Structure formats: structure tokens, C-alpha cells
Image (cartoon, rainbow, N blue to C red):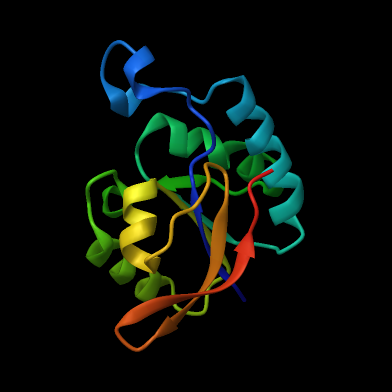
Length: 140
């Protein structure tokens, strides 16, 4: 069983988007990344897909969900600006489940003390009060 935490795929520049940033979708590159991630991550057999409610995060996991027949569950603890505590609590709740979570660069950075390219992520393990990165998932 694996817990995987991803940064959402490419969604263009925030400054180019007019309107609520929560609604900013993936761009062409991001859609390609999401499709490639689905091919890569499906083999790991996740049974849960949990995402920030932001459109770009949900869209990052949708191809994987479609391939597996698993619904993407939005969770505000993964929202931009939410910090690491909520994400860590969610990881603890998931425990031994095989799950893929999609969040934002700031949450992932706070959680693992690492920067991650858009569309990339980490297999994580719970290590006491923290999550620890144990395997890189490269951005496609």
C-alpha cells in the first residue's frame, strides 16, 4: 500500500487567469501531464483519490479516476494555503490505504520540506508526527 502526494499539473500562470483562482483549469501541458500520471499511477492500484477542491487539482486526478473507476474526493485540508497540519491529519486517516492525494506546491512544501515540480510528487510514509518522502514521482 502506498500514500502518494502530488502537486497539481500545469495550469498556466496565475497572473494570466482572470477570475477566481480556485477555478483555474489545467492548461494543455497540464492535461497531458494528468493523462501520463494516470498511466503511471494506475499500476500502483490506488483505491482512494483525494484532492484539493481547486479545479486544477481535481483535473489532475480525473484521468486516473476514470481509468480506475474511482471517484475523486475533494478535501479542503489539501487546499492552497491550508498548511501541512490538515494534510498530515488526512494522511493519518488514510493510514494503510493505497491513495493518491493532489494538492498545491505550498502545502506539499510545508508537508515534506521539499519543492516539487508541477505534476510531480512523492510516495510518503508517516514517520511519527511527520510525513517523510521515500520515493520521487517525477513530473511527466
